[in-house]
Length: 110
Image 1 (cartoon, rainbow, N blue to C red):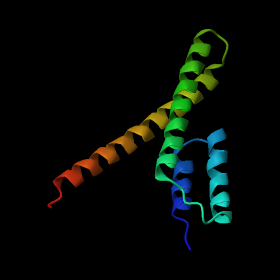
Image 2: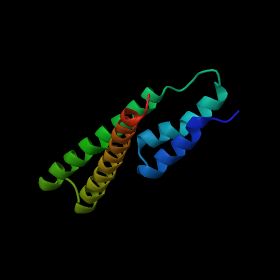
Image 3: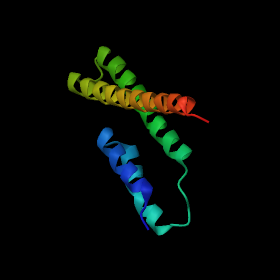
């Protein structure tokens, strides 16, 4: 039996930079194969991804403040801000797809 979430996890790892949450994502397929009876809830996956994006945005903001205070190097600040930007772009792309799907459902003939 194929695991439909494994391909989703692979794509999520390609979209976001390696962080502590990517270790959780890579561990999820192994856990899913060992416990095949436990279904994965789409809401939980979406909550995990949005939580990761929020933490990336907070880390980018904290890094930019630390950089302005001279507590962080410019390279570290740029890396954190670029990670936050990538997470924000991913979140916006997901939002656009959800809105598009909702509009498509609204246009369906009954």
